[in-house]
Length: 154
Image 1 (tube, rainbow, N blue to C red):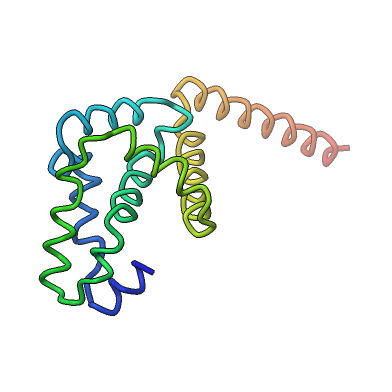
Image 2: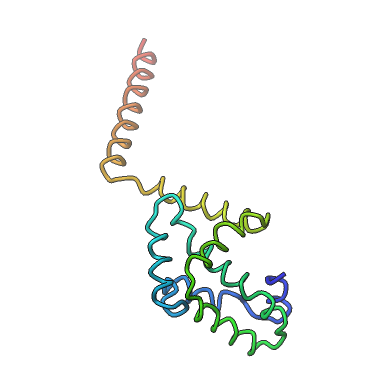
């Protein structure tokens, strides 16, 4: 609903959410809530998508007000005010982690974000592991090349 509404009003959500994500909500949430979000951000299995989940929770918690606003400037202003009174970090995270799991579209988006994170983590292996893998591939290539050369001479 919200995505369609933002499109109809002509307001790209990235205008607001870029600041949320780049500043890790320091300009959006009260400090005690920000610290709790950061705590969750540091947890390896769930932290990777906390920023997206908090963003979705903020939008969900203010959905009726946002949907009732059809003026571009008023909607942008409301989006900038979201979260300033979110002093209950437990409630915000509950919406972000429990309530959103019931929404198929949100589950799909979050699943995609988790897959991207896993891929990024898999690619960022230690330099030693990368060097070891490259050496193994070179060695395997040399062995297969020398076997081909030996059979060609015969």
